[in-house]
Every structure is written in C-alpha cells, then in structure tokens.
Length: 498
Image 1 (tube, rainbow, N blue to C red):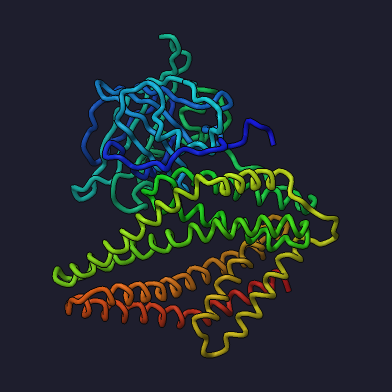
Image 2 (image 1 turned 90 degrees about the horizontal axis):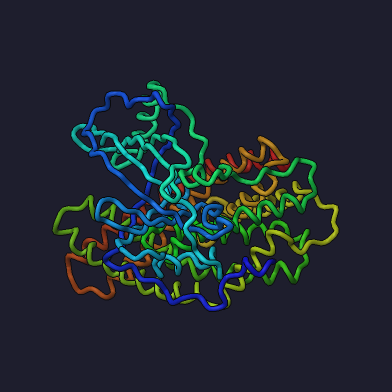
C-alpha cells in the first residue's frame, strides 16, 4: 500500500463535543431543474431569501469527496461556521461548529484522520448560493423545506460555472412526506438528479457510484475482493460518526461492517491462507467486542425512552432514572471506545483491512462460490433442527448467529446465484430481525433487574416488574413467529443451495 494512504502513527486525543457544536441528521431528495423551472404552489410558509458562500476543503486528491464526506466553511451575513457532512446509511449527518477561523477546526481533523492520514486540507472550491423556498406544512406542522438553489462556482471573483438545484429536506413528519412532495415537483417540471453533490459538479467529478460487480464467470477471488472492499469502505465511512458519538446509527453501521467482514472471512475460509485469515478475523472479533457494549446500550436507551413516553407521569420518573443510569454507562463506554480507536492496534487493523480488500491472501482451489453459501446454509439448517419444540434462549441465539453467517455468505454469491439467493437473503433478514428482538428483550430484562438491585423505591420496583413482564411478552411474541419464519427460510435455502 502506498505511504500516502497510511493513517498517522499516533492519532489525536479523543474528540469531545462542545456546546458550540450542533449535530443533525439530514434526510433529503435532490432533483434537477432547467432555467425555466418555477416552484409550484406549496402549502406552507415562504422561506427568506438567503445568500450562502461556502469554501470547500479537501486533499489535493479529493479523498474526502471520494469517501462521501464534505467539509466546508460557510459564511452567511455575519455568521461563520464549519460544516462537516458524514455518510449515515442513506442519509447524512451534519456537524456544525460556529467558528470564525479560516482553517479547519482541529476537532474535525481529529474525526477525519483515517481519511486524511498526513495529507493537508486545502481549499478546493468556492460556491455562492442564492437560496429561496418554502417550508411545507401539514396540519400546521412543518414537515419539509423545499428549496431552489442558484449556484455559482467562483474563483478569484470570477464566475466559472452556474447551475440550479432543487432540494427537499425533511424537517419533521413521516418518511412518506418526501416522496409525496417529489411527485408534486416532478409534475411541475423537475427531473432526475445525476446524484452528484454540488462540490462534485463544481469540480467536474463523476457521480459517486459503487464498483461494478464482477461477471458471473469471474474468478472467485474477484467476488471476494469486491465484498471485502465494500464493507471496508462502509466501516471507514462510519468511523468519524462513531468517534463523535452523537448518532447511534454510525456505530451500528460500523459494527455491521465489522461483523460482515468476519462473516466473509469465515465463509471464504477454504479460499484463504489459514494463518492470514485467522489473524485478521481475530482482530475483527476484537473490534466487534469493542463496539458491542455501546451498541447494546444504544438499543436499550432507545427502547426504554419509547416505553417511558407511554407511561403516566408517576411511573415515568423511575424509568427516567433507569434511562439516565444507562446513559451514564454509555458515556463511560464511549470514552473507552475512543481510547481504543486511537490505539496502534486499531490503526494496524485498518491498514490490514485496506490491504486485504486489494490483495487477499488466497490459495489455489477449485471451490465455487455456491459451495461457500451452501456450507453456511447447512450449518444453519442443522442449528434450526436442533431447536425442536421447546428451544432455550442459548440455542435461539446460536441460530441467530448462524442466520447472519448464512445471509452474509449468500450476499457474497448473490451476483452469480441470481433470484434464488436474493429471496433467501430477504427471508434471512426477516428472521434475523425477529431473533434480534428476542435477544434485545433478554438483554433488557437483565439490565432492569440489575438496576432494581440498586434501587430501594417501591414505585421503581412496581415499574420494573411491569417492564420485566413486557420483556417476557416480547420474547413470547417472537417465539410464536419463529416456526413460520424457520420454515420459510429453510424452503428458500433448499431452493437456492439444495
């Protein structure tokens, strides 16, 4: 691997979110419009006309842009702020720091050090945007901002390029709001966007797109390399958000990428040099265990916050204390996590993963991709049959693990296996979700009982008893659904793998 792609040998200290930093999730749809487009009448409040001047920063090779990350310094009237946008599944997380300095904040560099390495951040483009629009309301509640941007790319005071862009950004409400507005705007003349962010258009860069899958008859190692590269990029994309710690989904996606990489190495074991694969899988296991406790707490905090909202005021107070107890644990774990993510061990793992995606250590073999998926399915089928009529929690959890492994192995061969593999993957996802609910209920009951031991309040004991009963009901409902999903998955697996 080239020296320029290596991360710094000693990462910066863990970042801390200060009061001057705001983090939001940006959910939007972009549409293309011509010079004659006009916004149709929309139910809502006109937004004030704004002038936004943004200077974008990146490396000379546009490493951030290619990773789906943008960093800009924005000026609006007398307000100056730095904005960092990170990938977050299909959305983006925007972190804003009000700061008048002209160089990128140390905090943002710290978050991005895996992507930057030792490379310098330099200004790469300046965009001046006149923005108009409407805050759309439903039942007097704001649901989305529809904005029309008139963009000028400027350099040394001269305009190099002009274009217009239409955006629908969710403010509140259900996800269905955005598609409904999109249909209305398309009827008014808007059309498909090419997928390029403003910066890409300013720099004349091609739209970011996933690597084309190998052909069905391509060597097995080509399919393996693509799968490894896909999940290594996913892990790296969600590393900054995991460090920031304000959006649990970033950590979740980083953990998912870690788990999938381990599953790929396990499924492809017959293709790989044993010592190389085992060593890399061991380090991924370490990373998974590091991320696991934080993710488990995120799940529990979200669940119990939702439960508290459904209780009356006097029962809500003990549960609020319990959630605060979980949040304290989560904050402590975040500090441990940040410390490990700046360790030499983590940096070495990232180096090895990048190298593995380009040049995995393979052996000569005649094994086909379908053989890998078939082997994982057979192990899953055996585990399901062992459950019998009265499965215990341990065996159910083992089936959950083997379901994940069989699904990820199937994803490795989906391109060559066709629709039967795709249907198996869909069925495995459904079962995996159900088994996850069952496991979450077990973990929730354990945490409730632990908290109860530390509380002397009779009201807390009453609420805890109700919550324990709810966890048992969650498990029972999940168990009732399991046989049907087991049958469906086995049927799909038999059709795909025999």
